Amino acid sequence: SQQGEEDPQALSIQEGENATMNCSYKTSINNLQWYRQNSGRGLVHLILIRSNEREKHSGRLRVTLDTSKKSSSLLITASRAADTASYFCATDPSGGYQKVTFGTGTKLQVIP
Amino acid sequence: EADIYQTPRYLVIGTGKKITLECSQTMGHDKMYWYQQDPGMELHLIHYSYGVNSTEKGDLSSESTVSRIRTEHFPLTLESARPSHTSQYLCASTGTGGTGELFFGEGSRLTVL
Image (tube, rainbow over all chains, first blue to last red; front, side, top):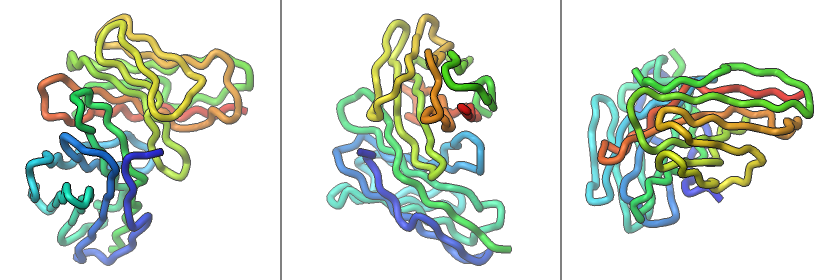
């Protein structure tokens, strides 16, 4: 089964609002990553947070990681129509082999 | 801009045909991956490679095979395609000692009639 589960599966918000997506995973990890996918395209890396980090920022993105709960969240602030895409968390499990597995994804729609 | 390329982008073929999906990267990455993405958007790891002559099966059983004869090239082959193989196939790579970020190709969308 997949390493990660995300919720919500789909999210629709107005432009300017914040969007929060959550990810839970099952095993110990080296790092957790978030990716974005526009419809029909490949995935693009957004941000990586290591297992010894609790929070990380990049522009309008804020990621938190709670290794005790095996969960992470991605916050997109002041959303724009161009943020409409699917967002995936991905985990690099401990063990050093970087066999990255993905969550189920959240489909975000930002309404102008 | 990621230097990883997949061909073809779209392929429609009949049942029983042999197909090869190509994936090449110019970043010198040692690790390469194939993911299968269902229409419902979940990604499944089907093959990965840590270097030349190294290939492993992923979490999702797949009838496809891969080879890694050169660092930059990681083709995926289906000997006899079936409608159940209809899916999007995504190739990715990353380098040892890097940030851990995966670089993805644009994907190959396969339809088997």
